[in-house]
Length: 231
Image (cartoon, rainbow, N blue to C red; front, top):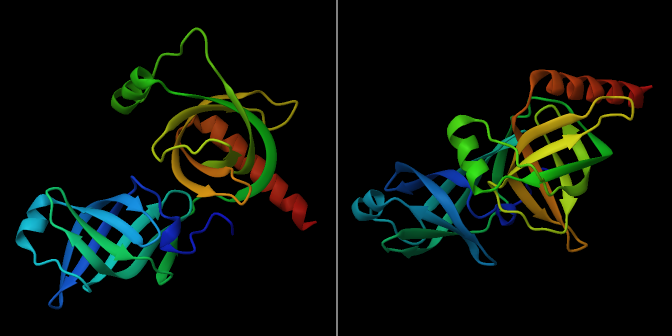
C-alpha cells in the first residue's frame, strides 16, 4: 500500500518517537523528537539527563518506535553514527530498511476521488482547540480546495502542492454523495507527508474530532463501496 512506510527515509521531522539504545546489554529507553531527516540518516533529540548520565557513543545498536495513526506501529533497527553532546543533545542514526510493522488500523479504507474543502486553524483557533477541543469560526473563511484520494472512518489522505508540516490542524468539509448532507468542520491533524513523483505531496490526515454520525456515514460508505467492488 502506498501509505505504508518502506524505510526510515520516509519519517518526518517533528514526529515523537520512543527510542531505545543498547548500552552494555542494557536497554536505555527515552522519548525523542525527530529533529531532521537527511541523506545520511535520522537525527533524534536526547533529553539532557540522558545525555549527561549515559555513555552514548557511535555504533551502539538503536531502536526507534513510531506510531502512524490509522496505519501501524513501526520499529526501526539501526545504529548510532554520530553523537552531538549539546546541550541540546542529539544522536544521529543510519537510515535503515530493517523494521517491523504492527497493524494499528481501526477502520477499513478505500480509494476515492472526492472533492472537499478545508481551512487552516489560525493561532488562536489552534490554541482554543488544543486546550478546549473547540474553536470559534471566523465570519470570513478562506477555504482551500482539494480531492480526497483515500478515506476511512479515522482519516484520509490527499495530494497537495503545499508541503504541510506534521501537526498542522485543518477543518474539513465534504459530501459523500451529491444527495447527502455536507459533513462539516471535521477537525484533522497532519500526521505524515510523502513526496510524490510529480513534485506534489501526499498529506495524511487523522480525524482528531468528528461527530459520530459523520464517522458512521463514512464507515457505511466505505463498507458499501468495498462490497460493491467484490461483486
